Length: 378
Image 1 (cartoon, rainbow, N blue to C red):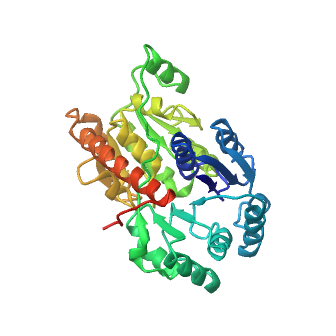
Image 2: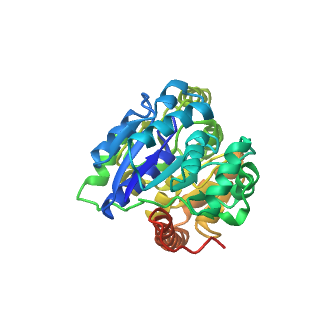
């Protein structure tokens, strides 16, 4: 199979990490993989990572030119048709950070009867789709040339309304791809702590996410101030970059927590960083199905997260500590409880849930990509 993965996103985040993992798994299954994405400072490393895995790459020129806004449907459709005129692909996977981020590519695939799997990573509010796109998508769905995936149950109604598609035509698959647990060599964990700047006695409260308002960094800072008032050994490590970094630094300084936070930027050894985490913390205000959460589950972390989007469905009722969004007091209390809980019960539950979910959802994703039999979501 010749697979093209299209990533219209203009930043590096969970959507791009997910697509890279799918590309690697597809190549392991013997498929030829290409990737198409904007070439921007924030995505240049993503393109290089695709090339390192042996994937061919194409620049999404209209995305490069329109960033940080999404290109128009017309400009996307023109470029999509040009790409598909010059290259033959058996399957296209759209990895969409927003539901309206690649409507032109979706329209081009539908009109050409090109097999396509569209993965909607984040859909938290209603959106408008031109009538021509809606009609083309409905026709492609009926002809089984198009499959739609969302990563959380909460998104189904919004996607159904926006695209004019019956809910039972939308698959629900959590982001679990590629959350492998690395082997530990002697001294490797200590080297990771040193590289991050964590003191030997520090209790590592780890967040892996883009630095944006969505990820709730202000809530984390307020909760950290509460926690640190009774536990000076707690060290908050944030792995990721994003447009909110300056505001996060200002919030940390205003709370006089400069000695409590370490901003580590983007790292390739996230698995090792998760192994040194005392607690994994995800304070998101809204979500799809965060890949970082699946990775924390795979690594058996104690997990504190907010009850938003697909998080409760992925983590399960007893896999961690769930709190309301934008509630610093509840977040601080949950982190305190997690630090004092040494039973290992919730991390075991999370790990077991990830194992069963991961295997099932990988099989269903590749059944769609490889056009084999698949059982729909209940």
